[in-house]
Length: 212
Length: 96
Image (tube, rainbow over all chains, first blue to last red; front, side, top):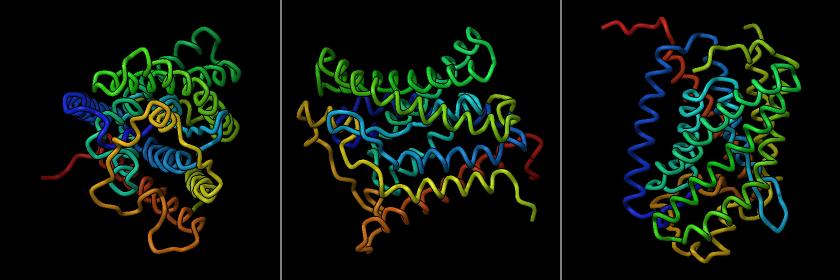
């Protein structure tokens, strides 16, 4: 879902850059308050995993592929602001080094896949586990819902940006983006559940870290 | 040095990067919409290229170029975010 340059208009570019810069700035402040020694390796591993897994596009129907965003997984394990920081680093590296996602569109990409996806994932997980309970099943179900919702809402944010940039009418952008990403979100859900069950099986304590 | 959990975690990440040549080459969700709705042509090329399209430049073998790009990116992200977290962590006060 990396938006290239040349698509968004200047107003959208400026607005999303401002919001994302504010979000990352606030995230850094939160991290400075709450981040402890034991968060440090997981932060690094999460960023490395998200980068590697994002390269691995999986096929969905109709000659389309999707890839993990990873913000929901990061937000479940580390909290939403930590996830925003991790996603921002991944997206900045992808844009600067790998020419994936435009330099001007970076603000929008951080907003969609960093801020929206992280917070959607975090609160959907909290909400679902509150309903289902904190059993293993509840957590994995919550992770699936969180991951699916994070992709779906990020896609809707992207559709709105296409609309306000005058690329597509909203009645075209919304169903197209939401439709494909409702399917891609299933892949996100399955990968997130797989990783979370690996964490539960091997290092359950990592789930108990204070959320940032 | 004792083996820590995250050493294994990093190896798992690098193993995932090794799988990158198996990735589907179909357009992703946004690219698909851009193609179907006819705005893919407005996308601009990047003003410069380093490891564009996740292919390490100058390597004929595409799978190898992809794996190399993946490993470099995975290690960079680990290093950058680990360092960032270490600098931000509580209880570490910079001396003037």
